[in-house]
Length: 417
Image (cartoon, rainbow, N blue to C red; front, side):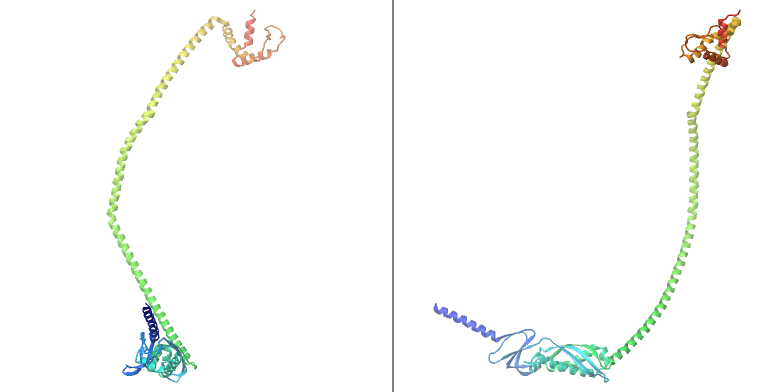
């Protein structure tokens, strides 16, 4: 058991020692860097070099025989600027730009970078690249006029890129991008060019604008003319079509109007004939209605009136006959009585007259009656005096009927001597 434990401890110790050794000898390379294992011999780009390059991945350093260095492949932005660089024509220009560079990652350019910048600080590498670019920039400016530099900055940057690329690759650096940001001069040449070009552009623009306005006016006039002509042609065509349509309508409506008029006349004639028959029937109906409502009742009323008149006349005749017979009898009686007939007649009427006269004094109580005027009697004694009222009533009766009531009474009560 002790032997097994010892063997296990030895194994664990061996593993730990091996892990430490491997961790110190194993190198892992990131994608943005390269590992340079110096100390061995190998062929690169047709020549023998004393290092090997690992780009990405991992590798084990041979202990005591190799040394390992890292080279950064990340981007290096560099501001490039020159002042007073003479262009073609002797005009000094000021140029400012920005460049993006990096260490080359592929041989044989990488071999140039390893030989020149292995173990060198990045700031020194950027300073070398900047000096190279500015030198190339001055060289490119000498081949271009200020107008070309100012008007086409892209062309200028491409010329500078192609000029500097070979020089940079010789020292192991790749130029990714180069942008010219500003071009100026201290003598105002570019400003004068700008003003001249601006004036020329304004002149061209004004001329083009005037031409455009003139062409637009001409085109507008032409369009207006064409529009008016088209409108007039359309109006004339519309009027012609309307006239033709109206003429066709009038011609086609003649027969229709005549037929319609004939039909209307025939309809009116038929309605009139039908109305005549209706009116005849209505006249007969009215005649019969009048006969039933007026004539027959009138005839009936006439017959009733005639019968009533005959009855009334018969009654009057009979009454007249009776009256005549009574009068005849009265006349006979009157004649037979002689001179006293008149007095007898009056006395027959006195009772009725006295009844009517006494009704006027029916509320009076008569205790004693004294008749004046030769009849006899004395003055009334006791009770109220009604002599005046009796005399007044007798006088009213005499005036109304001609009958002397008091005289008749006196004659009746005092016989003649």
